[in-house]
Length: 366
Image (cartoon, rainbow, N blue to C red):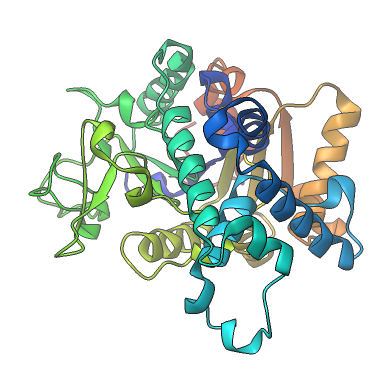
């Protein structure tokens, strides 16, 4: 049973939660730009924001990348602000003769303006991923039926900070996210992800690996232990345990490094990798997916993305092939499903659909 549970793994990107009212990275950029233009608290930092945005585009332009080829999103922006905020603590500081004079004028000599902008954005992030109305996320309940049909734990690797997957938990459906409960006395424990037959407790219905952190995580200042809370209002924006940007993909503190290792391990075990709402914009994730598909020519990747027609589906297939650096011979390993996350989760007989996509196995239940 546990062996078959490793045959299929899922990777959720921002598009998986978009229909539930959680903005995507591009939509987050649009929202903060409206805030910079319309709200007094933000408006005073508009010129600083424009300067940083222009500098990011300029850096891509030096590499011959313009317009749609510029990877300008919320992660790129916040990571850039974080690096600037480090100022004299940055390892490259001794090698830089002077900062851009206009940047200093806009951010202040101590770069306090940069810290303010980053804090404002993080505060909005907290609101965005905690919608007042969660009813639009009902389509996630399709995972309950999928797990029931497969009759083994689902393995969900998520790049999202929201709590839509955790809300599936009930007395009859346990979502294992590494915590025995809520509060500082229930710290994260990697051993809770062990699924051996000799495990002391019954297996959960789902293992959830939140690769980039979660909106309801907190870290004890003294012990550095990670725990979760039921009321996210107690989590200060500057203390949120969420990862932005490439520099933090392999954060040494648990659980980030552990989750990255687990994702790599299971991509090399699974027969079928299903991505839902993932835009293939994360180079670190892409490298592990690329390695997985190259490791086993029979391994399949199903990419669930919104596509209006066959032409758009073909364009997305070409993009994924390019991002994963796959050859034409490896192209058939990718199956692009042109539908929304809600449509996919509500697919009739989804379990049979996915199992039919897998390479044949001797112990397949169907």
